[in-house]
Length: 290
Ligand SMILES: [Zn+2]
Image: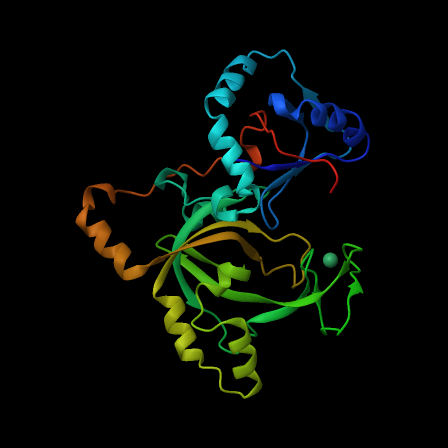
């Protein structure tokens, strides 16, 4: 799985240049104390106190080098396909033992994201299904100006664009939580496109019953984390989905009843989330300029 590692400051000029000079040789990079962000896709960057080691003499080195040589074609293909930007490749559908129940999730330490699965319910039928946001960092803006603006959050010169946002309740047998879904994760559940929604809203003709039915006919597998930087009151916990895989509820039920042997008790293993995944694997993608 390719992932972007961004080097900042001295790391960019020092190790970054060294890596750029030998990038063809698929160097082994070990990053210590990196920042892991799963805000939009998954990516890594250096922060104060990070260390980046290039081709360190570590025990796992020869194994990783051999792995890189054996999979060179696939690795290069993934880089060419820009798989490091593709959320579906970065966060594919988890296996059953990577799922945790909603009750377990609510009791877990909150820094990490976890996979949960459940049935969605459309909350609040008067909710607005989109908001205007910075095209770079997704900060919300009340109005959509005609011209580019400097975003007050990321300081970039950006367009303000409408972005889908859907708030649902996700429930499994153990519990439920309120979850915000964004962009395509929200859009895939809705029977209308975003321009259609805006147009129908304007005419007060948006069919909320159709939306409710579309949403409630699916089963969602979501990589979820608690929202930080609270917008609401402190006592209402907010959760956001980093990615959502949708399955059709009817199809899923018929397939699990066909192999009922596998629909055993749900696993209690929470996902060892990408936050803690093996950061020492050969990461040959480098984005030293961003
Ligand atoms: Zn911004």
